[in-house]
Image 1 (cartoon, rainbow, N blue to C red):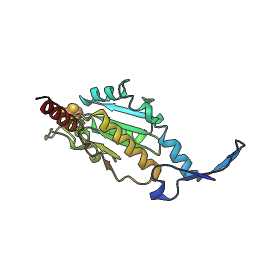
Image 2 (cartoon, helix red, strand yellow):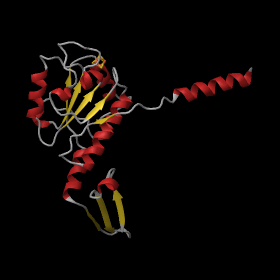
Image 3 (cartoon, helix red, strand yellow):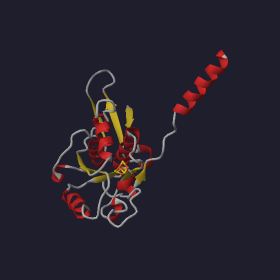
Image 4 (cartoon, rainbow, N blue to C red):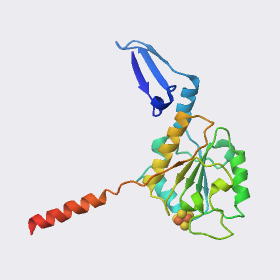
Length: 204
Ligand code: SF4
Protein backbone atom coordinates (compact mmCIF):
# COMPACT_ATOMS: atom_id res chain seq x y z
CA UNK A 1 0.00 0.00 0.00
CA UNK A 2 1.39 3.41 -0.89
CA UNK A 3 0.34 6.93 -0.03
CA UNK A 4 0.37 10.10 -2.09
CA UNK A 5 0.09 13.36 -0.22
CA UNK A 6 -0.79 16.61 -1.85
CA UNK A 7 0.61 19.91 -0.42
CA UNK A 8 -1.33 20.87 2.65
CA UNK A 9 -2.40 17.33 3.37
CA UNK A 10 -0.47 17.20 6.61
CA UNK A 11 -2.09 20.35 7.93
CA UNK A 12 -5.57 19.42 6.86
CA UNK A 13 -5.49 15.69 7.38
CA UNK A 14 -8.21 15.17 4.78
CA UNK A 15 -6.42 15.39 1.45
CA UNK A 16 -4.70 12.00 1.63
CA UNK A 17 -4.85 9.81 -1.45
CA UNK A 18 -4.13 6.14 -0.75
CA UNK A 19 -3.20 3.73 -3.51
CA UNK A 20 -3.69 0.04 -2.83
CA UNK A 21 -2.58 -3.00 -4.83
CA UNK A 22 -0.95 -2.76 -8.22
CA UNK A 23 2.55 -3.44 -6.90
CA UNK A 24 3.06 -6.36 -9.27
CA UNK A 25 1.89 -4.36 -12.28
CA UNK A 26 -1.71 -5.55 -11.98
CA UNK A 27 -4.61 -3.22 -11.47
CA UNK A 28 -5.03 -1.38 -8.18
CA UNK A 29 -7.32 1.27 -6.79
CA UNK A 30 -7.03 4.65 -5.10
CA UNK A 31 -9.08 5.97 -2.24
CA UNK A 32 -9.62 9.60 -1.38
CA UNK A 33 -12.38 11.99 -0.41
CA UNK A 34 -14.54 13.72 -2.97
CA UNK A 35 -13.70 17.23 -1.73
CA UNK A 36 -9.96 16.43 -1.86
CA UNK A 37 -10.32 15.18 -5.42
CA UNK A 38 -12.29 18.26 -6.47
CA UNK A 39 -9.77 20.59 -4.81
CA UNK A 40 -6.93 18.79 -6.62
CA UNK A 41 -8.73 19.17 -9.95
CA UNK A 42 -9.51 22.84 -9.33
CA UNK A 43 -5.96 23.56 -8.28
CA UNK A 44 -4.54 22.31 -11.59
CA UNK A 45 -7.20 23.70 -13.92
CA UNK A 46 -7.61 27.38 -13.10
CA UNK A 47 -9.24 29.48 -15.81
CA UNK A 48 -8.02 33.02 -15.51
CA UNK A 49 -9.76 36.27 -16.32
CA UNK A 50 -7.08 38.97 -16.79
CA UNK A 51 -8.38 42.41 -15.77
CA UNK A 52 -5.42 44.43 -17.04
CA UNK A 53 -5.50 48.20 -16.62
CA UNK A 54 -1.97 49.61 -16.40
CA UNK A 55 1.78 49.09 -16.65
CA UNK A 56 1.77 45.81 -14.69
CA UNK A 57 0.31 44.40 -17.89
CA UNK A 58 3.83 44.29 -19.37
CA UNK A 59 4.96 42.05 -16.53
CA UNK A 60 1.87 39.92 -17.00
CA UNK A 61 2.95 39.40 -20.62
CA UNK A 62 6.47 38.51 -19.45
CA UNK A 63 4.99 35.96 -17.08
CA UNK A 64 3.11 34.21 -19.85
CA UNK A 65 6.01 34.37 -22.33
CA UNK A 66 8.16 31.28 -23.07
CA UNK A 67 10.97 32.40 -20.75
CA UNK A 68 8.87 31.94 -17.63
CA UNK A 69 5.97 29.94 -19.05
CA UNK A 70 4.39 31.12 -15.87
CA UNK A 71 0.83 30.02 -15.77
CA UNK A 72 1.05 27.07 -18.19
CA UNK A 73 3.27 25.08 -15.85
CA UNK A 74 0.70 25.45 -13.09
CA UNK A 75 -2.42 24.53 -15.03
CA UNK A 76 -3.59 28.14 -15.29
CA UNK A 77 -2.66 28.89 -18.87
CA UNK A 78 -5.97 29.30 -20.67
CA UNK A 79 -7.49 32.78 -20.33
CA UNK A 80 -11.23 33.19 -20.60
CA UNK A 81 -12.55 36.61 -21.55
CA UNK A 82 -15.97 35.86 -20.17
CA UNK A 83 -16.24 35.97 -16.37
CA UNK A 84 -18.84 33.20 -16.54
CA UNK A 85 -16.16 30.76 -17.74
CA UNK A 86 -13.47 31.87 -15.29
CA UNK A 87 -12.63 31.02 -11.71
CA UNK A 88 -9.47 33.09 -11.14
CA UNK A 89 -9.60 36.88 -11.49
CA UNK A 90 -6.20 38.50 -12.07
CA UNK A 91 -6.40 42.20 -11.20
CA UNK A 92 -3.35 43.61 -12.98
CA UNK A 93 -2.70 47.32 -12.51
CA UNK A 94 -4.24 50.45 -11.04
CA UNK A 95 -7.98 50.49 -10.37
CA UNK A 96 -9.59 53.90 -10.61
CA UNK A 97 -12.85 54.81 -8.90
CA UNK A 98 -14.60 54.73 -12.26
CA UNK A 99 -13.37 51.21 -12.95
CA UNK A 100 -14.38 49.92 -9.53
CA UNK A 101 -18.04 49.13 -10.38
CA UNK A 102 -16.93 47.30 -13.53
CA UNK A 103 -14.46 45.18 -11.56
CA UNK A 104 -17.09 44.37 -8.95
CA UNK A 105 -19.59 43.36 -11.62
CA UNK A 106 -17.10 41.07 -13.33
CA UNK A 107 -16.31 39.42 -9.99
CA UNK A 108 -20.00 38.89 -9.29
CA UNK A 109 -20.51 37.24 -12.69
CA UNK A 110 -17.78 34.66 -12.13
CA UNK A 111 -18.50 31.06 -11.23
CA UNK A 112 -18.25 29.68 -7.72
CA UNK A 113 -15.83 28.74 -6.31
CA UNK A 114 -13.73 31.69 -7.47
CA UNK A 115 -10.49 33.31 -6.43
CA UNK A 116 -8.83 36.71 -6.84
CA UNK A 117 -5.15 37.57 -7.22
CA UNK A 118 -3.94 41.18 -6.81
CA UNK A 119 -1.04 41.61 -9.23
CA UNK A 120 1.25 44.44 -8.09
CA UNK A 121 1.23 47.18 -5.54
CA UNK A 122 -1.47 49.29 -7.21
CA UNK A 123 -4.00 46.46 -7.15
CA UNK A 124 -2.95 45.50 -3.61
CA UNK A 125 -3.07 48.90 -1.91
CA UNK A 126 -3.30 51.68 -4.51
CA UNK A 127 0.48 52.00 -4.85
CA UNK A 128 1.88 55.50 -4.90
CA UNK A 129 -1.43 56.98 -6.06
CA UNK A 130 -2.44 58.61 -2.83
CA UNK A 131 -5.35 60.49 -4.37
CA UNK A 132 -9.11 60.46 -4.65
CA UNK A 133 -9.25 58.92 -8.12
CA UNK A 134 -7.58 55.62 -7.23
CA UNK A 135 -9.02 52.74 -5.25
CA UNK A 136 -6.60 52.06 -2.35
CA UNK A 137 -6.62 48.28 -2.85
CA UNK A 138 -9.13 45.96 -4.47
CA UNK A 139 -10.18 44.56 -1.11
CA UNK A 140 -12.24 47.74 -0.78
CA UNK A 141 -14.48 46.32 -3.54
CA UNK A 142 -14.09 42.54 -3.71
CA UNK A 143 -12.44 39.80 -1.59
CA UNK A 144 -8.81 39.13 -2.41
CA UNK A 145 -7.07 35.76 -1.89
CA UNK A 146 -3.46 36.54 -2.75
CA UNK A 147 -1.51 39.80 -2.82
CA UNK A 148 1.62 39.97 -4.96
CA UNK A 149 3.59 43.11 -4.01
CA UNK A 150 6.01 44.89 -6.35
CA UNK A 151 5.93 47.76 -8.80
CA UNK A 152 5.77 45.78 -10.98
CA UNK A 153 6.24 42.36 -9.37
CA UNK A 154 8.85 40.04 -10.82
CA UNK A 155 7.43 36.99 -12.63
CA UNK A 156 8.98 34.80 -9.92
CA UNK A 157 6.95 36.66 -7.29
CA UNK A 158 3.79 36.09 -9.30
CA UNK A 159 4.59 32.40 -9.54
CA UNK A 160 5.00 32.35 -5.76
CA UNK A 161 1.54 33.92 -5.57
CA UNK A 162 0.07 31.26 -7.84
CA UNK A 163 1.61 28.48 -5.74
CA UNK A 164 0.25 30.19 -2.60
CA UNK A 165 -3.22 30.18 -4.14
CA UNK A 166 -2.94 26.51 -5.12
CA UNK A 167 -2.01 25.61 -1.56
CA UNK A 168 -5.01 27.54 -0.37
CA UNK A 169 -7.32 25.71 -2.77
CA UNK A 170 -5.97 22.36 -1.59
CA UNK A 171 -6.46 23.19 2.06
CA UNK A 172 -9.83 24.83 1.80
CA UNK A 173 -11.81 24.48 -1.40
CA UNK A 174 -14.28 27.31 -0.94
CA UNK A 175 -14.81 28.92 2.40
CA UNK A 176 -11.57 30.52 3.57
CA UNK A 177 -11.02 33.99 2.10
CA UNK A 178 -8.21 35.00 4.42
CA UNK A 179 -5.60 36.49 2.09
CA UNK A 180 -2.03 35.36 1.56
CA UNK A 181 0.83 37.74 0.84
CA UNK A 182 3.87 36.82 -1.22
CA UNK A 183 7.05 37.39 0.78
CA UNK A 184 10.23 38.76 -0.81
CA UNK A 185 12.72 36.20 -2.03
CA UNK A 186 16.41 36.20 -1.09
CA UNK A 187 18.46 37.79 -3.85
CA UNK A 188 20.95 35.13 -5.02
CA UNK A 189 23.02 37.68 -6.95
CA UNK A 190 24.63 38.90 -3.70
CA UNK A 191 26.38 35.57 -3.24
CA UNK A 192 27.49 35.56 -6.86
CA UNK A 193 29.02 39.04 -6.45
CA UNK A 194 30.90 37.84 -3.36
CA UNK A 195 32.32 34.89 -5.29
CA UNK A 196 33.48 37.15 -8.12
CA UNK A 197 35.18 39.51 -5.70
CA UNK A 198 36.97 36.63 -4.00
CA UNK A 199 38.09 35.40 -7.39
CA UNK A 200 39.56 38.84 -8.16
CA UNK A 201 41.38 38.91 -4.80
CA UNK A 202 42.88 35.48 -5.47
CA UNK A 203 44.20 36.61 -8.84
CA UNK A 204 45.59 39.88 -7.50
S1 SF4 B 1 2.27 48.58 -9.41
FE1 SF4 B 1 3.70 49.88 -10.56
S2 SF4 B 1 3.93 48.82 -12.53
FE2 SF4 B 1 2.05 48.00 -11.56
S3 SF4 B 1 0.37 49.26 -12.34
FE3 SF4 B 1 1.07 50.18 -10.43
S4 SF4 B 1 2.56 51.77 -11.07
FE4 SF4 B 1 2.27 50.35 -12.80
